[in-house]
Image (cartoon, rainbow, N blue to C red; front, top):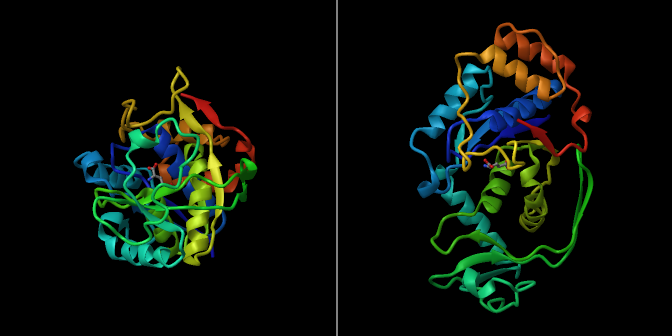
Length: 278
Ligand code: GLU
């Protein structure tokens, strides 16, 4: 059974780029007769915008996008990440690193300074090292081959959990079979596959969507103050989002527009596109 998801970080309100990814993942799930879940990735309280989680959930609901399971909040999932970290600890690929960003700046690759520190020590980040290259077949972007990645953080020095670990643990916990998300996250995929392999978890299928870019080419994002989505002209906004997904439907109640869109969903039309102008 297909299980898809939309996993926003509540660092800002829902904007056109995130609604685009939400609608695409929803359509893909519905077209496959599957479930669609929302997961709030609230792992980094200092970067969170007050009220953003609720705004995202309410706005999605106004657009007819409602999670088929109770919404998971990553801030409630520390124990699961702790368990995963203990498992990684047994692989010999985890090490506790005190190198500062400054120390590593300019080096072509990690010099292995902290590889020998295999058990926890204060004031260190837990990093995971991967020695093998990784390949996967992206449904939209085609075959992807990555050389061995640099060691990456799974638990930060300030004890916050890193996105890579949390996303892998939670996708598996929810039984996610298909990840449909923006291409800005494609380079995270090999790291996530490496963690899935180390944790004995299944690897979902990936489809990386084009991202919507500003006139200067930068990704539409909370960081560059993308406008929050309004619910006052939903029909018009949804028609625009669907057109960007190569689906033409007439304006009407959003539920009706979505229903028609499921029948017209042909993700291969987005194949090998990486950006869309605002
Ligand atoms: N939380 C991530 C973001 O908002 C997306 C995670 C994912 O889809 O894997 O960029």
